[in-house]
Length: 295
Ligand code: DAH
Image (cartoon, rainbow, N blue to C red; front, side, top):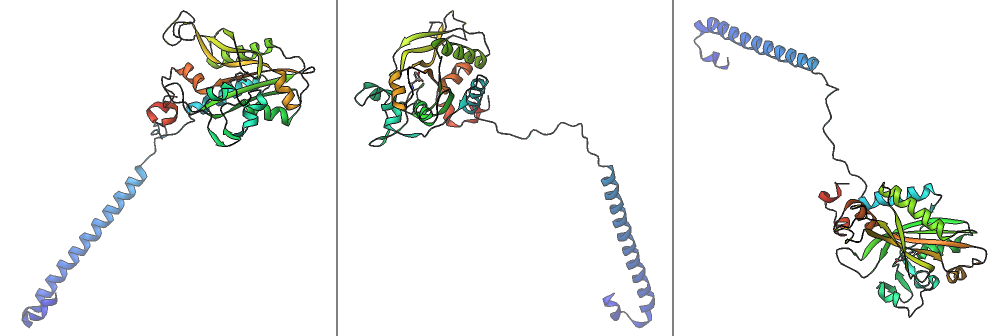
């Protein structure tokens, strides 16, 4: 159309008219095509439906760590029996960790436990038993508490880690006996493992209980016949326990003539290990999803 000026004047009207017709034709076709595409898009919009019965694509979702699950379950079972949760610091005084529990300075137990020292009289607690002391200093009997928490020892092999988790229990009242300890632990084992298992006590020595005993439960893998997991003994060790030593009461100002108590301590890693046949304590801490997702 721009070059129409170079066309001889005589031919201009005819060529101009023809050019206009072509232009109008192209514009009309473009407009028609656009309208058609618009209409198709609108139809597709209306035709699109949502199938609400279609299963959703799974959204990857985290969950609580096995040890957290085990801790919460254990606490819930003891709560059924009236135990409250108590806590204490992980950086603890030597006095709460050893002295008040009747473990004197030169006692080999302090070596055995291989303590991490933060300062002269300050340690990373080697067990949750100092929470017993803090609880008895803070309140009067009746006392019924469980204290789950992290503890530290210079220890490192397939069944030991320098940091691990214990659950301490303490009951103090006017008529507490060893029978109460047995009833509580038997109830716990049966609820936690969901099996009708027996428990037994083996006399043992812990400075802060008298009598003291190690607690075994019937092997839940072979039901006591003997297998690899119970090293063919039929029993699995689950913790320490005993009747609170009057020497401990003396440190916290509780009258041993008026009150008696029992205490126990268990390792949560071991409890989970015995329930799920976990073969190495490191699995709990490595954060490998292939392990964690199984629980
Ligand atoms: N504190 C002990 C340990 O870590 C375990 C223990 C034994 C706790 C006997 C207790 C108990 O409460 O009565 O080896």
